[in-house]
Length: 562
Image (cartoon, rainbow, N blue to C red; front, top):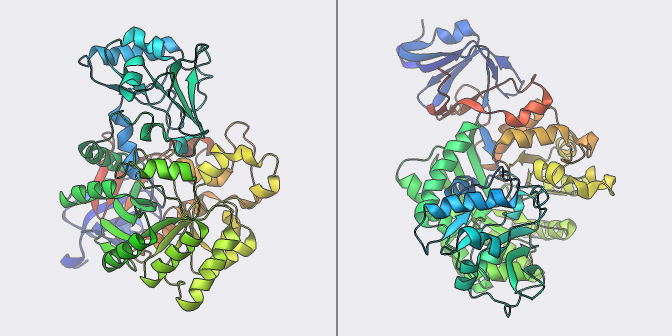
């Protein structure tokens, strides 16, 4: 008979418990005491641990996995998508106008009507081709249903798909923005579409990786408020929990306006997703950076500062960017739009000095390197010779095309690689059609494993469901043709799950507490809607969680699962 002190509060039994432990064991049952896993094993052994009043849940053969750890989540964005009317499902300009009219009819004259982009989430692809007219609506067509309200159809956040981002404004909106036939484009990358009389049609085409139109030409469009962001973060956590995500790592950085949102939700005791936030700096000079690092060094150095539900640590530092984009978006800080991070542009000399500063202050660097991987590695190795970084877990953000020797150098520096297989292979994989040899080094997970280099998977919030990303790592298919890219780099399903759980825990310094279902670890887990390991391959992207637990607390449960 188990001692009373070892009794469990909650027991799951009669299931397929994929532990992701050192031996890849699959068990039947799991017991939870408080916030911790008490035992994992057979039905008989675990059921014997039930204490008085314990909740006993029959899994009915369902599959349980460790909670997903998304190492490139952009979680704050997801809830924002529901703040604006959707145009999903429209197939003609008349359909678009019908949605706009519906919104105008419920909006007082003079107030803004702002919608989500034309197209279907999460990628908003196939536009404008999917519209019967094969084009976007014009200002004059929008005027037909909204003569007295400014209307703005947002362009996509291009990270969801590929550029361009196309937005549309009606005449009232253009008037408020003071855009007329004499208005010049702020940059060659932005087109103000015009008719045969040189009048703006209301259509803006922005070819930048991060759109700029709402940061200069259409800055009058209503922006996300703090209250909206707070509500959106609560909704985001609910949605991430619903697909089994229990922890996130925000290596691309969190800007001050979003950091404030996380802090408010944390203060209220409402965090349902463990969140490790990296600082997205807003420096304007090396001097400001030095002062900022000296201040933040007391809080964000080393492993970071915080508790089990919210921690802040390290800096995001980008090696290269487009000056026009960085300057335009930085000019509107603290506002960051969909990004949630501050876009900066540094010269190569500034990047080198910023990384050296961070090393001196024991601040973990999360670097988006770009094309010059060898140059960045030369820098990191030079820093390592004077200020060892191999125990600091610096992160190579958006690891994309890395040769085997580069992977070895990253490993030897103790750096971690965060990869986005859905983005690089499924969404944008057509770039490899003419260069198949590059597909073999793109998000080359098999090479990482062979060389013992540490990596983990991230969703990049496109979509937020981690099983779509996991599927992309398993099949490595391009979206339009189904072409397999770098077949020698595929992962099996259990390997991909490990990259989203056990490997992710290393990013947050939690490998001894999270990432697998083992006695003594925190009880973060998800019961899946199907068996990840045996289900048909094509169904994996639609997997969801029937029940999600964070630290022994059920944070999501389907109504029909008890």
